[in-house]
Length: 441
Image (tube, rainbow, N blue to C red; front, side, top):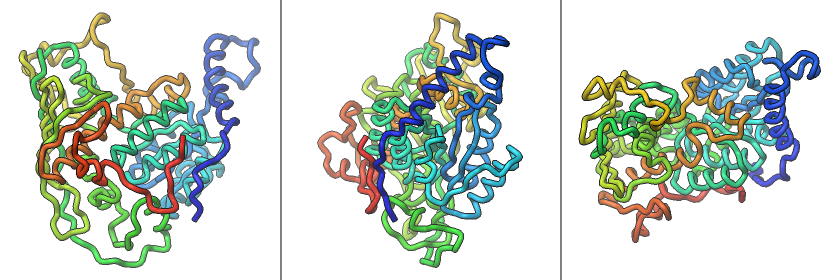
Protein backbone atom coordinates (compact mmCIF):
# COMPACT_ATOMS: atom_id res chain seq x y z
CA UNK A 1 0.00 0.00 0.00
CA UNK A 2 1.37 3.39 -0.90
CA UNK A 3 1.65 5.93 1.86
CA UNK A 4 2.90 9.04 0.12
CA UNK A 5 1.84 12.01 2.18
CA UNK A 6 3.34 14.74 0.02
CA UNK A 7 1.41 16.45 -2.75
CA UNK A 8 1.67 19.73 -4.67
CA UNK A 9 -0.08 22.67 -3.05
CA UNK A 10 -3.79 22.51 -3.72
CA UNK A 11 -4.16 25.96 -5.27
CA UNK A 12 -7.68 25.29 -6.51
CA UNK A 13 -8.86 24.65 -2.96
CA UNK A 14 -7.09 27.71 -1.58
CA UNK A 15 -8.74 29.84 -4.25
CA UNK A 16 -12.13 28.29 -3.42
CA UNK A 17 -11.60 28.98 0.28
CA UNK A 18 -10.86 32.63 -0.46
CA UNK A 19 -13.87 32.79 -2.79
CA UNK A 20 -16.18 31.39 -0.12
CA UNK A 21 -15.10 34.08 2.32
CA UNK A 22 -15.19 36.97 -0.14
CA UNK A 23 -18.54 35.91 -1.59
CA UNK A 24 -20.04 35.69 1.89
CA UNK A 25 -18.92 39.26 2.61
CA UNK A 26 -20.17 40.49 -0.76
CA UNK A 27 -23.58 38.86 -0.47
CA UNK A 28 -24.02 40.28 3.01
CA UNK A 29 -23.28 43.81 1.80
CA UNK A 30 -24.99 43.64 -1.60
CA UNK A 31 -27.89 41.22 -1.23
CA UNK A 32 -30.19 43.56 -3.15
CA UNK A 33 -32.20 42.42 -6.18
CA UNK A 34 -30.56 43.47 -9.44
CA UNK A 35 -27.04 43.98 -8.09
CA UNK A 36 -25.86 40.34 -8.21
CA UNK A 37 -26.84 37.66 -10.73
CA UNK A 38 -29.53 35.20 -9.71
CA UNK A 39 -28.16 32.09 -8.01
CA UNK A 40 -25.21 33.88 -6.41
CA UNK A 41 -27.19 34.79 -3.30
CA UNK A 42 -29.65 32.77 -1.24
CA UNK A 43 -29.36 29.77 1.03
CA UNK A 44 -28.92 27.36 -1.87
CA UNK A 45 -26.23 29.39 -3.66
CA UNK A 46 -23.40 27.03 -4.72
CA UNK A 47 -20.76 29.50 -3.55
CA UNK A 48 -22.10 29.31 0.00
CA UNK A 49 -22.07 25.51 0.24
CA UNK A 50 -19.06 24.15 2.10
CA UNK A 51 -18.31 20.74 0.63
CA UNK A 52 -17.42 18.08 3.18
CA UNK A 53 -16.00 14.57 3.19
CA UNK A 54 -16.54 12.13 6.07
CA UNK A 55 -13.76 9.77 7.15
CA UNK A 56 -15.02 7.08 9.50
CA UNK A 57 -18.76 6.48 9.36
CA UNK A 58 -19.40 3.98 12.13
CA UNK A 59 -22.00 4.65 14.81
CA UNK A 60 -20.77 8.03 16.07
CA UNK A 61 -19.46 9.11 12.68
CA UNK A 62 -22.86 8.51 11.09
CA UNK A 63 -25.50 9.07 13.75
CA UNK A 64 -23.91 12.19 15.22
CA UNK A 65 -21.32 13.80 12.96
CA UNK A 66 -22.79 13.07 9.53
CA UNK A 67 -26.35 13.55 10.77
CA UNK A 68 -25.61 16.98 12.25
CA UNK A 69 -23.74 18.12 9.12
CA UNK A 70 -26.70 17.13 6.99
CA UNK A 71 -28.85 19.57 8.97
CA UNK A 72 -26.64 22.55 8.05
CA UNK A 73 -28.03 24.59 5.11
CA UNK A 74 -24.60 25.89 4.05
CA UNK A 75 -22.81 22.53 3.95
CA UNK A 76 -23.00 19.64 1.52
CA UNK A 77 -21.76 16.10 2.14
CA UNK A 78 -20.15 14.86 -1.07
CA UNK A 79 -18.11 11.82 0.00
CA UNK A 80 -17.91 9.19 2.72
CA UNK A 81 -15.15 6.78 3.64
CA UNK A 82 -14.72 3.76 5.89
CA UNK A 83 -12.61 0.60 5.94
CA UNK A 84 -15.84 -1.34 6.55
CA UNK A 85 -17.71 -1.59 3.24
CA UNK A 86 -21.11 -1.98 4.89
CA UNK A 87 -20.62 1.21 6.92
CA UNK A 88 -19.59 3.38 4.00
CA UNK A 89 -22.38 2.08 1.81
CA UNK A 90 -24.90 2.76 4.57
CA UNK A 91 -23.58 6.32 4.98
CA UNK A 92 -23.73 6.84 1.22
CA UNK A 93 -27.40 5.84 1.22
CA UNK A 94 -28.13 8.27 4.04
CA UNK A 95 -26.52 11.15 2.15
CA UNK A 96 -28.19 10.35 -1.16
CA UNK A 97 -31.54 9.98 0.58
CA UNK A 98 -31.13 13.39 2.16
CA UNK A 99 -30.33 15.12 -1.13
CA UNK A 100 -32.59 12.88 -3.23
CA UNK A 101 -29.85 12.03 -5.72
CA UNK A 102 -27.02 9.53 -6.20
CA UNK A 103 -24.09 11.97 -6.15
CA UNK A 104 -22.32 10.90 -2.94
CA UNK A 105 -19.00 9.12 -3.50
CA UNK A 106 -17.93 6.19 -1.33
CA UNK A 107 -14.29 5.25 -0.63
CA UNK A 108 -12.34 2.65 1.30
CA UNK A 109 -9.13 4.72 1.42
CA UNK A 110 -9.36 8.13 3.14
CA UNK A 111 -6.72 9.57 0.80
CA UNK A 112 -9.32 9.55 -1.96
CA UNK A 113 -11.20 12.18 0.02
CA UNK A 114 -8.32 14.40 1.11
CA UNK A 115 -6.89 14.47 -2.43
CA UNK A 116 -10.14 15.74 -3.96
CA UNK A 117 -9.78 19.39 -4.88
CA UNK A 118 -13.52 20.03 -4.71
CA UNK A 119 -13.73 19.16 -0.99
CA UNK A 120 -13.32 22.05 1.45
CA UNK A 121 -13.44 20.28 4.78
CA UNK A 122 -13.25 16.83 6.35
CA UNK A 123 -14.86 15.33 9.42
CA UNK A 124 -12.66 12.63 10.98
CA UNK A 125 -14.47 10.07 13.17
CA UNK A 126 -11.95 7.23 13.37
CA UNK A 127 -10.18 5.48 16.26
CA UNK A 128 -7.70 7.75 18.05
CA UNK A 129 -4.55 6.32 16.47
CA UNK A 130 -5.59 7.85 13.12
CA UNK A 131 -6.63 11.32 14.32
CA UNK A 132 -3.36 13.23 14.02
CA UNK A 133 -2.03 11.58 10.87
CA UNK A 134 -5.27 12.04 8.93
CA UNK A 135 -5.58 15.62 10.17
CA UNK A 136 -2.04 16.47 9.12
CA UNK A 137 -2.49 14.92 5.68
CA UNK A 138 -5.75 16.82 5.19
CA UNK A 139 -4.20 20.11 6.34
CA UNK A 140 -1.30 19.51 3.95
CA UNK A 141 -3.84 19.33 1.13
CA UNK A 142 -5.43 22.64 2.13
CA UNK A 143 -8.44 21.19 3.91
CA UNK A 144 -10.11 22.49 7.06
CA UNK A 145 -10.64 19.78 9.65
CA UNK A 146 -13.11 18.86 12.38
CA UNK A 147 -11.72 15.82 14.16
CA UNK A 148 -12.88 13.62 17.01
CA UNK A 149 -10.81 13.68 20.15
CA UNK A 150 -8.29 12.92 21.57
CA UNK A 151 -4.79 12.72 20.10
CA UNK A 152 -2.92 9.45 20.68
CA UNK A 153 0.24 11.12 22.02
CA UNK A 154 1.42 14.49 23.29
CA UNK A 155 3.82 14.84 20.36
CA UNK A 156 1.03 14.30 17.81
CA UNK A 157 -1.04 17.05 19.36
CA UNK A 158 1.82 19.49 19.03
CA UNK A 159 2.35 18.53 15.38
CA UNK A 160 -1.31 19.21 14.57
CA UNK A 161 -1.45 22.51 16.47
CA UNK A 162 1.70 23.77 14.74
CA UNK A 163 0.48 22.68 11.30
CA UNK A 164 -2.86 24.48 11.80
CA UNK A 165 -1.04 27.67 12.71
CA UNK A 166 1.44 27.43 9.84
CA UNK A 167 -1.15 26.64 7.14
CA UNK A 168 -3.79 29.01 8.59
CA UNK A 169 -6.24 26.12 8.59
CA UNK A 170 -9.44 25.91 10.62
CA UNK A 171 -9.38 22.97 13.04
CA UNK A 172 -12.18 22.09 15.44
CA UNK A 173 -11.68 19.54 18.20
CA UNK A 174 -15.00 17.77 17.90
CA UNK A 175 -16.79 17.86 21.26
CA UNK A 176 -20.13 19.33 22.21
CA UNK A 177 -19.40 20.48 25.77
CA UNK A 178 -18.79 24.15 25.01
CA UNK A 179 -22.19 24.39 23.38
CA UNK A 180 -23.93 23.19 26.58
CA UNK A 181 -25.20 26.08 28.69
CA UNK A 182 -24.35 24.33 31.95
CA UNK A 183 -20.62 24.23 31.16
CA UNK A 184 -20.57 27.66 29.54
CA UNK A 185 -22.25 29.25 32.57
CA UNK A 186 -20.05 27.27 34.95
CA UNK A 187 -16.84 28.51 33.33
CA UNK A 188 -18.11 32.10 33.21
CA UNK A 189 -19.04 32.04 36.91
CA UNK A 190 -15.53 30.86 37.78
CA UNK A 191 -13.76 33.28 35.44
CA UNK A 192 -15.74 36.22 36.85
CA UNK A 193 -14.79 35.44 40.44
CA UNK A 194 -18.21 34.36 41.72
CA UNK A 195 -16.67 31.56 43.80
CA UNK A 196 -13.68 33.68 44.84
CA UNK A 197 -10.15 32.34 44.46
CA UNK A 198 -10.24 28.80 43.07
CA UNK A 199 -8.55 26.28 45.34
CA UNK A 200 -9.40 22.95 43.79
CA UNK A 201 -11.51 21.22 41.16
CA UNK A 202 -13.03 17.78 41.63
CA UNK A 203 -13.79 15.79 38.46
CA UNK A 204 -15.47 12.40 38.07
CA UNK A 205 -15.20 10.33 34.89
CA UNK A 206 -16.58 6.87 34.05
CA UNK A 207 -14.83 3.60 34.82
CA UNK A 208 -13.44 1.46 32.04
CA UNK A 209 -14.66 -2.08 31.32
CA UNK A 210 -13.12 -5.49 32.14
CA UNK A 211 -13.20 -6.88 28.60
CA UNK A 212 -11.79 -10.43 28.41
CA UNK A 213 -8.74 -11.35 26.37
CA UNK A 214 -9.44 -12.58 22.83
CA UNK A 215 -7.75 -15.07 20.53
CA UNK A 216 -6.80 -14.20 16.91
CA UNK A 217 -9.34 -14.88 14.19
CA UNK A 218 -9.87 -14.03 10.53
CA UNK A 219 -11.05 -10.50 9.75
CA UNK A 220 -14.44 -10.26 8.03
CA UNK A 221 -14.47 -9.81 4.26
CA UNK A 222 -16.30 -6.53 4.87
CA UNK A 223 -13.15 -5.02 6.47
CA UNK A 224 -9.78 -3.81 5.18
CA UNK A 225 -8.01 -4.66 8.42
CA UNK A 226 -4.52 -3.54 7.36
CA UNK A 227 -5.89 -0.08 6.58
CA UNK A 228 -7.78 -0.07 9.89
CA UNK A 229 -4.46 -0.64 11.67
CA UNK A 230 -2.68 1.95 9.52
CA UNK A 231 0.10 3.56 11.58
CA UNK A 232 -0.50 1.30 14.61
CA UNK A 233 1.74 -1.72 15.24
CA UNK A 234 0.91 -4.89 13.34
CA UNK A 235 -1.41 -7.09 15.38
CA UNK A 236 -3.63 -10.10 14.65
CA UNK A 237 -7.31 -9.44 14.16
CA UNK A 238 -9.54 -10.40 17.07
CA UNK A 239 -13.32 -10.50 17.28
CA UNK A 240 -13.97 -7.15 18.99
CA UNK A 241 -10.68 -5.28 18.51
CA UNK A 242 -12.15 -2.90 15.93
CA UNK A 243 -15.32 -2.14 17.91
CA UNK A 244 -15.46 1.32 19.49
CA UNK A 245 -15.55 0.64 23.21
CA UNK A 246 -13.08 -2.22 22.83
CA UNK A 247 -10.29 -0.54 20.84
CA UNK A 248 -10.46 2.34 23.30
CA UNK A 249 -9.06 -0.02 25.94
CA UNK A 250 -5.90 -0.88 23.93
CA UNK A 251 -2.82 1.37 24.17
CA UNK A 252 -2.00 1.03 20.47
CA UNK A 253 -5.23 2.81 19.54
CA UNK A 254 -6.22 4.95 22.52
CA UNK A 255 -5.35 6.18 26.00
CA UNK A 256 -8.39 4.57 27.57
CA UNK A 257 -11.46 6.04 29.22
CA UNK A 258 -9.32 8.75 30.83
CA UNK A 259 -8.43 10.29 27.46
CA UNK A 260 -11.92 9.71 26.07
CA UNK A 261 -14.01 11.28 28.84
CA UNK A 262 -11.22 13.54 30.04
CA UNK A 263 -11.46 15.47 26.79
CA UNK A 264 -15.02 16.39 27.75
CA UNK A 265 -14.84 17.28 31.42
CA UNK A 266 -11.27 18.61 31.52
CA UNK A 267 -11.95 21.05 28.70
CA UNK A 268 -14.44 22.81 30.96
CA UNK A 269 -11.84 22.75 33.75
CA UNK A 270 -9.23 24.41 31.52
CA UNK A 271 -11.85 26.89 30.27
CA UNK A 272 -12.88 27.87 33.78
CA UNK A 273 -9.32 28.14 35.09
CA UNK A 274 -8.15 30.19 32.09
CA UNK A 275 -5.41 27.61 31.43
CA UNK A 276 -6.53 26.55 27.95
CA UNK A 277 -3.10 27.12 26.39
CA UNK A 278 -0.89 25.86 29.18
CA UNK A 279 -0.98 23.03 31.71
CA UNK A 280 -0.04 21.72 35.15
CA UNK A 281 3.45 21.58 36.63
CA UNK A 282 3.04 18.37 38.66
CA UNK A 283 1.03 15.21 38.08
CA UNK A 284 0.58 12.12 40.22
CA UNK A 285 -1.85 9.25 40.22
CA UNK A 286 -2.64 5.59 40.57
CA UNK A 287 -4.86 3.25 38.63
CA UNK A 288 -5.80 -0.34 37.90
CA UNK A 289 -5.79 -2.23 34.63
CA UNK A 290 -7.51 -5.41 33.46
CA UNK A 291 -4.67 -7.84 34.20
CA UNK A 292 -4.16 -10.61 31.67
CA UNK A 293 -6.29 -9.02 28.95
CA UNK A 294 -5.32 -7.37 25.68
CA UNK A 295 -7.67 -4.60 26.82
CA UNK A 296 -5.21 -3.11 29.27
CA UNK A 297 -5.59 0.68 29.58
CA UNK A 298 -6.55 2.02 33.01
CA UNK A 299 -10.14 1.17 33.95
CA UNK A 300 -9.98 2.86 37.37
CA UNK A 301 -7.87 5.91 38.16
CA UNK A 302 -7.18 8.66 40.65
CA UNK A 303 -5.06 11.48 39.21
CA UNK A 304 -4.15 14.88 40.64
CA UNK A 305 -2.90 17.79 38.54
CA UNK A 306 -1.19 20.71 40.27
CA UNK A 307 -0.86 24.08 38.52
CA UNK A 308 1.80 26.73 39.09
CA UNK A 309 -0.69 28.89 41.03
CA UNK A 310 -1.33 26.05 43.49
CA UNK A 311 -4.74 24.95 42.16
CA UNK A 312 -5.25 21.20 42.27
CA UNK A 313 -7.50 19.24 39.92
CA UNK A 314 -8.42 15.77 41.12
CA UNK A 315 -9.74 13.31 38.52
CA UNK A 316 -11.34 10.09 39.75
CA UNK A 317 -13.20 7.29 38.02
CA UNK A 318 -16.82 6.66 38.90
CA UNK A 319 -19.42 9.06 37.51
CA UNK A 320 -19.42 12.21 35.33
CA UNK A 321 -19.54 15.05 37.87
CA UNK A 322 -17.55 18.26 38.25
CA UNK A 323 -17.11 20.90 40.95
CA UNK A 324 -14.98 24.07 41.16
CA UNK A 325 -14.31 24.96 44.80
CA UNK A 326 -13.24 28.47 45.79
CA UNK A 327 -12.86 30.73 48.80
CA UNK A 328 -16.41 32.10 48.42
CA UNK A 329 -18.33 29.05 47.30
CA UNK A 330 -18.55 26.35 44.66
CA UNK A 331 -20.15 25.64 41.30
CA UNK A 332 -20.53 22.45 39.28
CA UNK A 333 -22.97 19.70 38.32
CA UNK A 334 -23.67 16.13 39.34
CA UNK A 335 -23.72 14.39 35.97
CA UNK A 336 -22.63 14.97 32.39
CA UNK A 337 -24.53 17.93 30.92
CA UNK A 338 -26.63 18.05 34.08
CA UNK A 339 -28.14 21.26 35.45
CA UNK A 340 -25.85 23.80 37.06
CA UNK A 341 -25.49 23.51 40.82
CA UNK A 342 -23.87 26.02 43.15
CA UNK A 343 -23.43 27.05 46.77
CA UNK A 344 -25.75 30.04 46.26
CA UNK A 345 -28.49 31.23 43.94
CA UNK A 346 -26.35 34.24 43.05
CA UNK A 347 -23.69 31.96 41.60
CA UNK A 348 -26.17 29.64 39.89
CA UNK A 349 -28.07 32.46 38.19
CA UNK A 350 -25.07 34.62 37.29
CA UNK A 351 -24.79 35.82 33.70
CA UNK A 352 -21.99 38.23 32.75
CA UNK A 353 -22.62 41.81 31.70
CA UNK A 354 -20.78 43.63 28.94
CA UNK A 355 -17.91 44.58 31.25
CA UNK A 356 -17.49 41.06 32.62
CA UNK A 357 -15.62 38.09 31.15
CA UNK A 358 -17.86 36.75 28.36
CA UNK A 359 -16.66 33.40 27.03
CA UNK A 360 -17.41 32.78 23.38
CA UNK A 361 -19.44 29.72 22.55
CA UNK A 362 -21.93 28.50 19.98
CA UNK A 363 -25.11 26.90 21.27
CA UNK A 364 -25.61 25.49 17.78
CA UNK A 365 -22.89 22.92 18.51
CA UNK A 366 -19.40 22.08 17.32
CA UNK A 367 -20.40 21.42 13.69
CA UNK A 368 -22.22 24.74 13.33
CA UNK A 369 -19.32 26.54 14.99
CA UNK A 370 -16.84 24.84 12.66
CA UNK A 371 -18.72 25.92 9.53
CA UNK A 372 -18.92 29.49 10.80
CA UNK A 373 -15.15 29.44 11.35
CA UNK A 374 -14.51 28.03 7.86
CA UNK A 375 -16.31 31.07 6.47
CA UNK A 376 -14.83 33.69 8.78
CA UNK A 377 -11.31 32.15 8.99
CA UNK A 378 -11.41 32.72 12.74
CA UNK A 379 -10.69 30.08 15.37
CA UNK A 380 -13.57 27.77 16.30
CA UNK A 381 -14.53 27.35 19.94
CA UNK A 382 -12.26 24.32 20.57
CA UNK A 383 -9.23 24.95 18.32
CA UNK A 384 -6.23 22.68 17.80
CA UNK A 385 -3.97 24.31 20.40
CA UNK A 386 -6.64 24.17 23.10
CA UNK A 387 -7.58 20.60 22.19
CA UNK A 388 -3.92 19.58 22.31
CA UNK A 389 -3.46 21.06 25.77
CA UNK A 390 -6.56 19.27 27.02
CA UNK A 391 -5.39 15.93 25.57
CA UNK A 392 -2.03 16.51 27.27
CA UNK A 393 -3.66 16.56 30.72
CA UNK A 394 -5.05 13.08 30.05
CA UNK A 395 -1.79 11.74 28.67
CA UNK A 396 0.13 13.07 31.68
CA UNK A 397 -2.28 11.28 33.97
CA UNK A 398 -1.50 8.05 32.13
CA UNK A 399 2.26 8.74 32.36
CA UNK A 400 2.10 9.20 36.14
CA UNK A 401 0.01 6.03 36.58
CA UNK A 402 2.25 3.95 34.33
CA UNK A 403 5.35 5.07 36.23
CA UNK A 404 3.59 4.90 39.63
CA UNK A 405 5.21 8.15 40.75
CA UNK A 406 4.87 11.91 40.64
CA UNK A 407 6.17 13.68 37.54
CA UNK A 408 7.05 17.32 36.96
CA UNK A 409 5.87 18.91 33.72
CA UNK A 410 7.17 21.92 31.82
CA UNK A 411 4.10 23.32 30.00
CA UNK A 412 6.29 25.64 27.89
CA UNK A 413 8.78 23.07 26.59
CA UNK A 414 6.14 20.32 26.85
CA UNK A 415 8.50 17.84 28.40
CA UNK A 416 8.57 15.88 31.65
CA UNK A 417 11.41 17.51 33.56
CA UNK A 418 14.62 15.47 33.97
CA UNK A 419 12.86 12.20 33.26
CA UNK A 420 13.90 10.31 30.13
CA UNK A 421 11.85 7.27 31.13
CA UNK A 422 8.67 9.35 31.14
CA UNK A 423 9.48 11.17 27.91
CA UNK A 424 10.10 7.87 26.11
CA UNK A 425 6.72 6.36 26.94
CA UNK A 426 4.38 5.68 24.01
CA UNK A 427 1.78 8.08 25.37
CA UNK A 428 4.28 10.93 24.93
CA UNK A 429 5.53 9.99 21.45
CA UNK A 430 5.73 6.94 19.24
CA UNK A 431 6.87 5.78 15.83
CA UNK A 432 4.41 5.03 13.06
CA UNK A 433 4.25 1.62 11.44
CA UNK A 434 5.97 1.65 8.05
CA UNK A 435 5.28 2.92 5.48
CA UNK A 436 3.19 5.64 7.20
CA UNK A 437 4.90 8.96 7.92
CA UNK A 438 3.85 12.33 9.25
CA UNK A 439 3.89 14.91 6.45
CA UNK A 440 6.41 17.72 6.83
CA UNK A 441 4.37 20.88 7.02
